[in-house]
Length: 405
Image 1 (cartoon, rainbow, N blue to C red):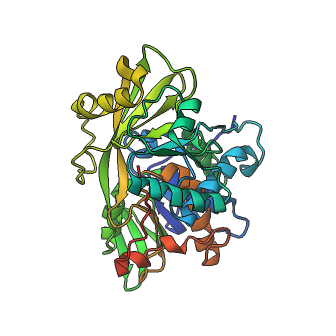
Image 2: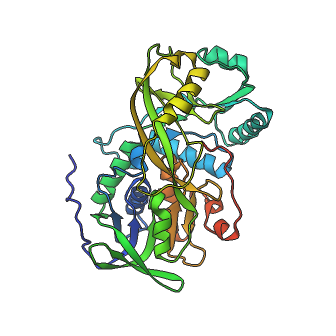
Image 3: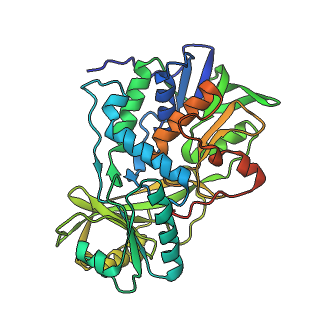
């Protein structure tokens, strides 16, 4: 078993090449990719305020994976996630102690009940197909033959991809990134950045809650739903805010005879098989920004929105029993619900990896690799993600992703 030193409260050094603010899935992805890059030999510090990660978006994820996006860059990002998961042990050096990460490919099933959305799904499918994704458009009779448990009243068509799309074990990926990054020399400390020193077009240091001022050549903002708070410490603005998202795990009195794809119902509710159980979730109808520490679970959303929707679409779910539930936060990009990755347009050594709006776990492999490339080479190399850069925020030009859940 790999032995690692305990995570401490204070940094071992007065200066670092890279300081990553936030040690959950994004911060740990960046940390591992940097530490595994043979062309990077700098010192890396990860500052995480909560070592339990209890309230992080990573801890509340549904661990979904899909290629059904409307922008090519998001499709390519998703395809790398699938490749990385399939070859996880190889990417992490072949250590037999590292587990395999299977993808449970029951796919997403987008259901359209109006011609406008049906047209969107058809257009998306053409783009996805051109990128090599296995998405297929299914008419109601085809859906009924493959998945006879649906009530398809009012449904025009569905969009489904049964290849490398569904569920994967993102928590294991996160755990091993963190372990291997530390084994490679990355320092993790339990502390909190309370101030960022900036001089003109450069950030220079961070001040920790414990009082230390630590010099940084580069700062990476991997703060999840708290990303705007981190940016403001450097007098920078970021259109990312916490939004509540509800998840319920339930058992059905009459289980389905096959896997339930991750179904996106026209009501806005989604549901899927979750091991021996089922999972469903949704945003609230009134969806404002909330306090960063507000995880209030309004159980009425189950009675008033979730259960009626799932029981209508899958009549076997008329009789179910809730066995678990929670609220997590989307790090919601209010401009266009797409990731923001790369340097600030005026402060080039402050790098964003933020605003994933619910896609973070499945996008984390490409984001870690891309930020590692930016820091090491000054450019994206494997996949150009410049369309997701901060410049569009300055221009107020949304790069819209139409396939948002």
